[in-house]
Length: 400
Ligand SMILES: Cc1cc2nc3c(=O)[nH]c(=O)nc-3n(C[C@H](O)[C@H](O)[C@H](O)COP(=O)(O)O)c2cc1C
Image (tube, rainbow, N blue to C red; front, side, top):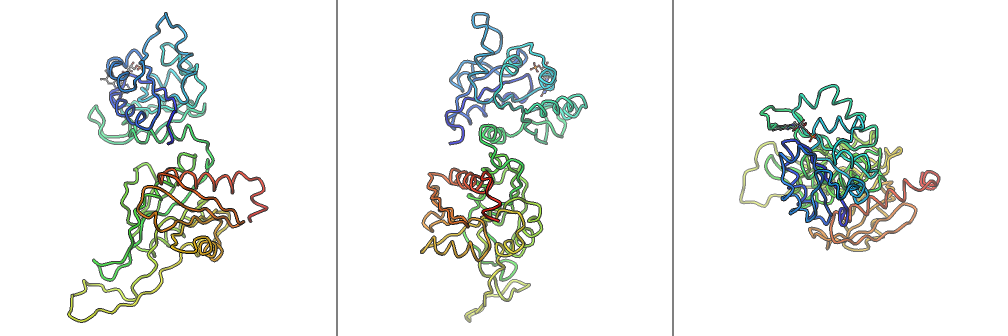
C-alpha cells in the first residue's frame, strides 16, 4: 500500500555492502514500487547492471551516454525519491562538497525530491571527523541519513558501519514519501497481552498478538514521530531500531506507563491488559490435588484511567473490543477514563488480517475505518487522530 506506484531511484556506490541492494530491489518491487538504479563507476566492481536491470525490470545506468546526454536530468525528474545505498565515504564527501563528477553525483544535484543515504563503511572510516562533518552537512541540507547497523563488518572488525537492514531502508523510504503529521512528537504505544500469575509457572492472559500495536508504531514512524513501545507478551518481532520496553504483568505495565507518560505527546493504549489477577499468588509451584481449587480474582489496575487522571497536554487514545452496543459502551469508557479518542473494534475481527474499527472522539466525531490489513487500519487511525487533534488550529479551544 505505502510504496505502490512510487518511483524509487537507487544510487549504488563502490562499497562491499552493495550486493544487499539486490534484496532491497526485490522488496520494493514486491510492494508495487518502480525502481531504477544508477551506479558510480566504482560500483561496477561490486554489482552487475545485468542483475540490477533484471530484478528491477528497468535499465541500469552507470556512465554518461552521450547519445542521451540529459539522462541525469531525466532520472532526477522521473523519481519520487532518491536513495543512495550503500553510500561510500567517498560519495558522501563529494555530495557534501557539491562535486558532480559522475552520473550518480550529477543526478543527485539535479534532483530536488526527497533524498536519503544509507552509509556503509568500516567504523573507523565512518567515524572520521571529516566524514562526520560531511554527514552533518548533508543532514542540515535536508538529506535523511539512515543509521548504519552494528555488527561484524566485512573487514572482520566489529562495530558500527554495516549497511542498515533492508527493511529499515524500506521503512525510511515510506517515511520520506509520507506527510509528516507526527513530526517531532513522541508517542507511547502499548501492545500485546499482560500475564497474571497464580504461581511461578501458571498464569492467566489473553491471545493478543501485538500486531496492531506494531502497525501503530510503524504508522507513527512513517509520519515522522518517535514511537516508544511497551510490549507485554507478543507474537510479532519488533524491529531492533524501535525503542522498546518489555513487561510481564499489568502492575509492571502501569509502573512503566506512569514513568514514561510525562515525557510523551500522545499515548495509544493498544495492549490487551488482563482484567483480573489472582487475589492470592503462591511463591512455590502449586501441587495438583484431588479437590477443586477455588481461587479469587481481583480487578487489575485501570491503566488508562490512571493516565487520564494525570493527563496534562498528552493526547490519550484508548482501544476497546466490544461484542454489543459498540458505540455506547466505547463512549462511556471514553468519558470515564478522560480519553481524547477511543477506537472500538467488533470482536469478530480479532485474530483476522482485515481491520475494522470506529474512531470516536470526545467532541462526538465518528469515523468508520475498514481496511484489508491492520497496517492500513493503523495508518488511517493515526492519520485521522493527527488531522483531528493536531492540524486543527481550533483544537486547543475546542478540546482542552
Ligand atoms: C573490496 C572493497 C570494499 C570496499 N568497501 C567500502 C565500503 O564498504 N565503504 C566505503 O566507503 N568504501 C569502500 N571501499 C572503497 C571505495 O570503493 C572507494 O573509496 C571508491 O573510490 C568509492 O567510489 P564511489 O564512491 O565513487 O563509488 C571499498 C573498496 C574495496 C576495494
